Length: 226
Length: 213
Image (cartoon, rainbow over all chains, first blue to last red; front, side, top):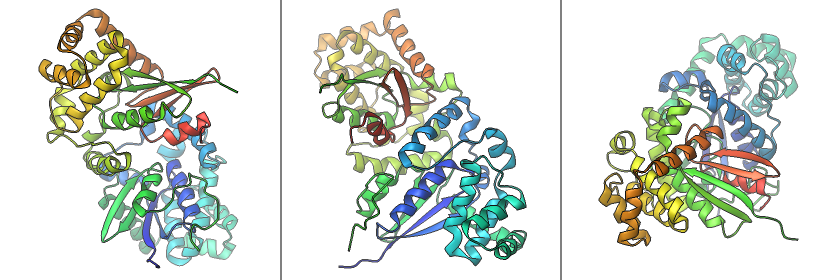
């Protein structure tokens, strides 16, 4: 008995470390579970503004906790997370507008490259403490992901078009309409219903909703079904 | 090769639904994992005040999300969670001071009853939408848990003593010193270190730290 793959949407921003964790886990499971994973690059700053929420790290105890939590999760999820030294500047001042517009352009023009370019941007800002705001930073990530110099330049130019700006706005709005007050959010479509799950720590629950097996954040790569 | 049980502290408040989830899971695992579970009744209002945090439900989108999240978790964790109808009043106005003082008294005088009385208080406020602030509410929970009328009355009287008030203050302060900005927090003591984990969704990580997979 074959059943149609279930549609999963992951709304994420490379500025968000927990988005990276959710992203890696879902990328690992997309070839194990009967799902279609739709990556939805969004702007966390826009979601915060729309919901009236604030970045958790603005509260000192939450910031300290997040730092410790990410050190545990780095090992447990096997994702090379490393907080940038000047965390406040990176997250609160520099932001991710160009990076997320770039990913939006990739999604429109070269969607098969979206996973890899997203990962390279995370590796820059959340592993090697490198910039993701300057044009040369974006181009470096794109080329590392496998785009040619020309493709990367062309996509970067598209970032200033209304098409790309509006597409990012719409994706971010879609996340807000699903009830997001932060990122990541996972939206799973089941039986004409959808369920929104916030954070990277509801994936075991997601498995339960899908009727799939949870093998932890680092599953074996063997397929569960033949 | 036997090793000593690892010490786990669960700081919780019956006002907190996620505390109930963490509580039930750890109660189930306390006889499976090589752990000693120390229940630490605390006041979430005090932790919020100390850390400058606010109850998440004050943000509308967070409140809506919490309501949906708890409906999923109710089934997944098999805990009969049901949000009170007048959520704002119960959480923000009525609070849990007497209930947590009562559990503090239970912990001092009849610690073997702490798990059951805690559960009965959660069943009132977070399952049957019943009061937990009036003396008769507390006594009803205590008796349902198995305390006699006399024991329950005596513990209730102790709630107004400095001993009990200070004990709750100290436990709440201990949670703050561990870095709490909300509840539940689980503190696991391993190899002369401790690790503080916030929420009821870090228990798989806890298992990993305890190497009990």
